[in-house]
Length: 397
Image (cartoon, rainbow, N blue to C red; front, side, top):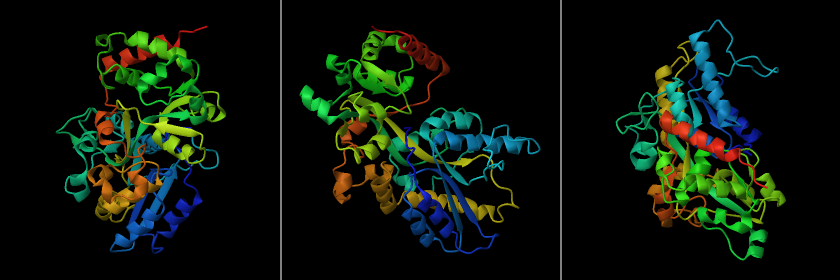
């Protein structure tokens, strides 16, 4: 199970077609390629009602962020060499490349690479009321220079519309036998969990939670300055039965592991179907992620989009619509991830399911202690990779 890979289903596709308005092929089209289940279906109908003229809304859900990233690469390759093939294999059932979208979903962690490879272009968002309401850290994560590094004076490369955390999930029945429940990262090192933990197969996440346990930031650039880091990672490695970013929850469901570290969207969805599973955001803080709207660097030609200026305006309207208070609440209630706008609202004004869901909307002190994973210099990346490989090659009897 990958982060945010839940199936939206045929109803979303049907609504995308029903929301097309008139059948005029020359009408303006808003073509959005989005992550499955990241936008509630009913928001499309509500957005259409805000438009003053007929517009075709084509919302195409994709199972994985990597699939959408691949689309961006295909579009750029075709634009650079339209006479050649895309350079990427397409399914046998259809060799036709995907239609170029006006907007697509990416995760904030993909921004650096997408900017460096010139797969996306900056967005004009400063004048939107929703951008003005966006909390500073969500503005900061999408302001980048042309190398994809954080830059307070940089351009805006994405529009965050929902976010989540990395959390600890655990089997309630097993921990009732132990007589305690996990509350923070340090609990992963307790001896009774030897060979009972599944972790994400990610050096930034695993080394990062260890750094957090030691009182450091996820975004440390020089790991050599962290005392006892390798020793702590080796001790944690003894606890781990499985490293996987795809199947970390299956062993937990089966009882082969008692605790798993994973993405809040996956765990919130699974917890609703399995009452034995509980979860907690570590009290010392955790890592944050965000889904953002980005604009492909390659856009449709005038022949394909008869009103490019109108299409551009539509992308801004859609982004701003996602930041409206009611849209933000709907996204948060129905997509297993919170809108960043919720952070700015009085909790007493929120529906009770949001007020009481601490996995979706953490306590302010925990949220303040949590961090996005920032892009690191190449030297730092090499440090993380080298340490990760050293730890993973060690076998314990």
